[in-house]
Structure formats: structure tokens, C-alpha cells
Amino acid sequence: MRAKWVLYCVVSLAVLVGGRSARGDASDEPAGSAAPAPAPSAVTAEPILDAGSGAGSGAGSDAASGSAVTAAPIAAAELANEMDPVDADDGEPPTKLFDEDGDGQVTAEEQADEAEYAHEFAGISETIDTEAVDRELAAREPSKRLLPSIGVEQFRAMVRIVRKVVLHKMEHKMELASERKMTKFAIGVVAFSALGLLLLLMPLGLAKKYPGQGKNLFKYAALAAVTFIVTVNLFGAVLLGMRYVQAQLGTRTNPTLAIASGTFETLDTHAEEYAVMGKELFAPTLEQLRGGEEQPAVVLLANGQKIVKDASVFVDVANMLKKVSFLFELLPVVLMFVTMLLFVLAIRPTLMEIIRLPATAASGRANAGRDVIAGALRRVRGELLATLCTVGVLALLTFLSGAVLGEIVAPAIDSLIYYFSMTVSYLQYVEGASSGLVFATLFAVIFFLVLNLGVLILSMAFFLGKMQKIFQARFTHGVPLSSHVPFIQRAVGAVLLVQLFPWLFVFVASRALAAINESVLENAGDPNAVSWTKALMAGPLALVVGFLVLFWAARGVKAVGYLFRYKVVVPELPADQKN
Image 1 (spheres, rainbow, N blue to C red):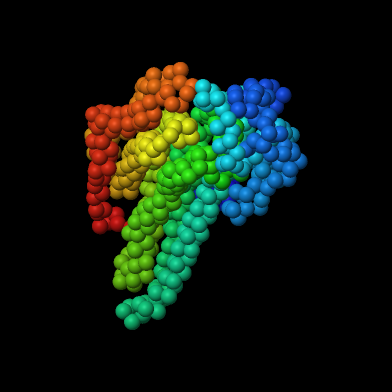
Image 2: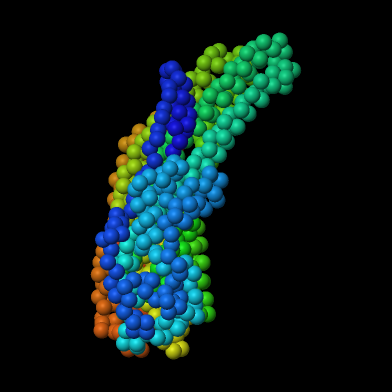
């Protein structure tokens, strides 16, 4: 996050405590995480097990025979000059594709990434020729149709270098989006605070009601205007600080980033399985991803139609996953809206008292100005303390949810890509293959992923929201925390149950699923020897039905409902303490 937002927060809070103006600086930017890619010289491609084209030495071994996915080698110089489309789309000055830190300079390490990328994707095109793919797949011997078509180690090297680029671009895009939201929020706060200048006109409207009080009216109108502006900006600084912390911690629990990272992780871990369609499908898809504009799993699913002609079911499933990803991307927008709503509700009583200050003073109330200012600062101080406590809870929840998210998303995406790869082979080789069966299979796996992410997000949001209200009641209304001890004890247990259940379920289910798939596909080199209905439906149904039944049996539904239904009662302030 930019230093100016930290400076904004520090200066505003300094006004609250009466200190001198302070300066703050922050240059912490979340570093992208990626699995280390091997040096180009260390990669040895395995033979392509493709009976139709003979053994080869890499993805580009069929270039001379009209392969569906080969093209002229990628030149490192071309990559070096390629601009990042994400920056242009986000209104930022475009940077080089491998300029990972966005500083406009390509370092030696970044140049090595360029060279490695050019080496690994030599001969790989991002375009998939459906007709050529059909010819290549038809040329395979029936007994070898489910064997790898590309060297496994080369496939892994491709995945790792693309992962390095794509995850960085996605994090960069999220950081830019967060900055824009924070900018809009800050501008909104400043613009709203400027409405306080209208209070200078109040004496004109109150002159008839309070004759002879013109001097006092103008004096307290000016005081009210200044107090209004300062109070709004102080509240804004507190909430801006909370949003800053949320943005910094957000990369650990961002579902969109987790899905993308899980996609690359499963391709790397299970390269032997996905290399079956490596040359025809996965390698071209990886080449398409280097711009980092799309969710990798969405691009992969959509490309299924290019492998199997007229298989529009893959486009339908890809669109469904894209909508799910969009909903998760929408969460920060919803949180920003909720933040603004809470901001307005929290300061409304204080601002109303500030607005009424000129009339209150003119009516003869002693110390009206001092009481209103003291009350406003007291309320801001309470919100600050409540926010600090909420941020502490948020940090703990983030580390817990981030750990669980990392453990559950990768196996879920692994299941999605595994069954996608199976359905491609099913539609390609089996006569009378059912697109309905394919859709049901992939829908079930995506639904399982949504269930896991849903319970994590809902439990975290409900618990954090209730704790924020409890802290606000404590520091702005004096409600002791002890009055909420029964809820806190049960809520902590509930949120731990809901957060840890998906982890435990995926741990057990992944092993059960592996056993199911192994029993169905054992020694199956010929697609016609596979019981496809059992192979495609047994695992996904076990995931969805098993999760729903066991989550209900473990009282997970009741736990989420308890977190949602609990009401934090805030008493009315005594008359002498109201702002």
C-alpha cells in the first residue's frame, strides 16, 4: 500500500491525541509466492509416449509433422519487449511482462525467467487446432491413449515458470484494485467532511429563532464546522487503517488467488496424470496464461471444447466457474460497502450533536462547545480502540483461515482438473459419450469447492462482525466484555469447528477418492475398458454428499447459525454522556 495512506492515518490520529503532526512511511508490499523453477539446463524432457507420432524429445518434437500445438520457437528478445496487458487494463503505465516488481527495470533474475520461459515453451503455441488435435489423438494406439503425450519433467518446468508469472500478475492486479478502492474511500471521506463548511450558513437560518445571538451563532457555527471536518476525517482514518490491515492480510485468504495457486500446485504435483493431454491441451493453455488476466482453471476448462469438437459442456462449466470466481472477487467490494455503512452509522449520533451545536449554545446551555468536542473525541477514541481489537481478532482468523484454505483448495482443484482430464478422454474416445454426465461430474466438484470456501468465509465474517460490535459496545458505551463471555466461549468453539472441519474432511476424502479412482482405473490403458459412469460420478458424489452429511452431523450448520443470530445489545447512553 502506498505511503500516503499511512501518512493520512498517522496525521489524523495525531490530531486526536493532541500531538504534533507525524509522518509515516510504509513500503511493505506483499511478495508473491511461487514454487522455485528449475534452471533451463537442468530440465531433461522425457520421451513423448505417443504411438501415432513416434517417440520424441519434447513438446516441440512433432513440429515438422504438423502438430496441433507447435509453432516457431519463442524468442527471448520478443518476450523481453512484451508489455503486460494487466497494467494497461488497470490504468497503470504498462510494464514489461517479466518486470515482477513493476519498477520499469528488468533485473538479471527477471531476465533469467524470460530465458527459461522461452526455453521451456519453444515450439508451443497458445492456439489449439481442433482438427489437428483430432488427427493426433486418433493416431494413438488404443492401448496407449491414456499415457503421457509430453515429458513429465518438461511439463513440470512449464507449470512452474508460468506460475511464477501468473501469480505475481494476479497479486499485482489485486494490489492495484485495493489501492483504487482505498483512494475512492479516502476521497469520499474528505468530500463528506467538506460538507461541514455548510454549517457556517446556519446562523442565517437561526437568526430569527435566536434574536441577538448573532455573534454566538457565528462563533459556534465556525466551531461546529471545524469539529465536523476533523471528526469525520478521524473516523475515516480509523476505518482506513482497518481496511489497510485487511488488504495486507487479504492475500492469505483471497479465494481467487487460492484457486489460481491450487491449479498450478495440482498440475505440478500430479504432472504424470495430466501429461496424458499435456501436448494437446495443458501446454497450450499454460502458454495462454502468461498475461495473468484470467483464472487458470477457467481457461483450462474452456479449452476443453477445442480438444473435443462440439463439446460445449466445457464452456458451460468454465462460465460457471468464472461466475463463482467473480462472486469471490466481489467480496472486497461488499466489504467496502459495509465499511462505509458502518462508518455512517457509527458517526451519525456524533455528527448530529455537532450540527446542533450552534442552536444548543444559543439556547443558553453552558459549556456546549466543550461538551460536544469532548464527546466527539471520546467517540473517535472508542472506535479506534474497538478497531485495534478487531484487527487483532482479524489477524488471528486470517492465519487460521489462510492455513486451512491452503490445505483444502489444492485438493479440491486437483479433483476438478483430474475429472476434467478424464472427461476429455471420455468424450474423445467413447462412442455415445454423454455431455450430461460430464456436466454433472464437473458441477459436483465445483459445488464441493464452493461449499468449502463458503463455510470458511461465512464463519469468519460472522464471527469478526460480532466481535467488532462487542468491542464497539465496550469502548463507546462502556458495556463490559464479561457480559458477552458466554457468547465468546461458544463462538470461539463454533468458528474453530467450522474452520477446521473442511481441512479434516479433505484430508480423509482425498485418500478415499484416490482409492476409488485407483480401483476404477487400475491397469486401464484402453478407454473402452473403463466403467465411465462409475469413474466420473462415484468420487464427486462422495465429496458433495459426504461433506453435507458430515458437516450437518458435526453440528456445523448450527454453529454457523449461532454466529449469525447472536445479537449484540447496545444500551442507550445516559443523557449527560451523549455527544
